[in-house]
Amino acid sequence: MEGIKESFRGIALTDEQMQGLKDNMRSVLGEEYYALTGGLFFDALNSRARYIVFLARRCFNLMNLYYRANYKVPDINYEQRVLSDSGLLANVPSIAYRYVAHRTIPQILIVDDILIHGRGINNLIDTFIHSLKDFLDDRGFVYTYENLERDVIKSITIRVMAQNNKPLLMKGSYYQRLLVDGYKPTIWEPRQWHELSSCISRLVSESVFSNTSFTLSLYGDKATSVKSSVEEAAQRLRFIKSAWNKRFISDAWVKPLKRKNGDISAFYTLRITQNMIDDSICVVPFVLASGIDFNFSEILFKRLFDENTEKFISKSHLPEKVSAEFIYLVLSYNLLLLIQEDCKISNLITVNKLDIDKIILNFGKGTIFASGIDELLKFDEPLLSWEEMNSYLLASTSNSKPLISGSRESKAAKYHDVGEALEEIVAKEGEEIERIAYLEYSGQKSTSKTTKLKPIFKLFYDVESETNLANDNDIADLVGNFLRQMDRGYVAVTTQIVEHDELQYISCVYRAAEASHFIHSKKYSDYLPVLIEMESDCSYNCDRIIERINRFYEDKPDVKTKLEEYTKTLYESGQKLMDWDINWLHWTEIDDDTVRIFGSQSCDDLLISQMILKSLNNAESIKKYRSVYPKR
Image (tube, helix red, strand yellow):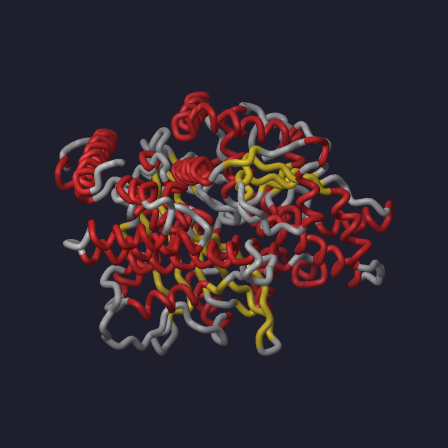
């Protein structure tokens, strides 16, 4: 694991894998978007910035994929300067001491793929300034927030691949940093950046590396018995397999941790996937828990650091968000060690089978967290046994709301499928965020600079209220679908430390991510060609479009109601139906109808058959519409 010039830390790609990754990126993104990705990557790497910050998770993962596809030997500029947003916060102590000594902030470049509203960048810069001030205040260095903010802003440059053509919600002083050095981003119409967004989401969800930022993942070749060994261990340990993805190459295994009253306070989860490049295996461990009492972190740190425990316990030394992520990293890695302990393969988990290099960039190379990861990797046996881990999670979450209630009564459920319920709730949350953003930048509502994060239990509670969770299999399907939402980019998941009843809790939180806007648009993509024709015929008048939907789909009342609601939602958010006229063939999930018709075909042939069917159906639906409403 030493010698950055000689080899990557963790999993190393062969020449064939690198070429496969590069070919896959070109295939999914297309040559234009692949070139844009490379342009942004090299523009960032050639900057003078001391810290190059790729926003997690999507841009961070996209740039890591590009890097690994094009560099056989690690590049010292990349390895020493690139961070995620959490990695920047982890560097607050060293930046603060430099500021005290020299009254300067090192140059920081913030990079994102698509600038939509700008709230993510707002939140990062605001959090960075507040963390810096808190750290300085704790040590008796007095600087006004205004002066500190001025010095931080002077140090920042912002780069993006493309910018939404609508007004932004970024602070004016932050937006000015997007234009320094004469650099101007490409300003795109929604249809084009929607297509770019869908391509990037698909790429990062299917490629060589897991779509995570603070969980170490295990890799193994298709020819090895890693997958079968992990699955057999999961079965012996009473994990429940959840059907997870229609591409047939991804599974989720879920094990609930229950309190005495039946409430579920945590889930042990494993995702086992095969990537689209060489079918190699990736095992992603992740512990989901309701709020963990921060005081219990001392138990973990004493196991991990022994005499250096005090460095990690002291809240004043560390950024809260990164500390919370580190707790989850330790718990999830311990889960992987517990699985290894039950597997029949000796030394299943080795350093060269983990994505260590990417995860360290998330926690900041050279920070105390990177040192913590080094200490963690010295363990070849679990820090906590199953009994100890169960006891730890049950005790540390005892004062928190459960993820799932143990007392459930049968009711008239709105949804019969937990996956559909989860998708609908996330989709509507994402659309509400978009609607509020439109009201804010159109001046109809006062501006809120950030999108509020919600605790995970709130999302599960909403699904529980809309469905009947009859048994643990239903619950496992819910959690499996939630993990799928994470990896497809529909929900953005992170952790933070929150205060309640004079206690601090490490809370796993989420928000509906940008890709959540694709849920309904993709679901109704078969109707979009006709809806777009209606929109043009009705001169973009929403009321007239609704009237035409009513008449044309009067024999399909369920479809009519859903398309009405969808159209109204878009127009209330300042969007049009034509904004979503993108190439939906980039979405590679095979639907059930295609499987029923061509079930004996290979996965690739099924995709081709589905593309042909969709093209024929679209042409037929437009022909039918024009027979009723001839084009004038």
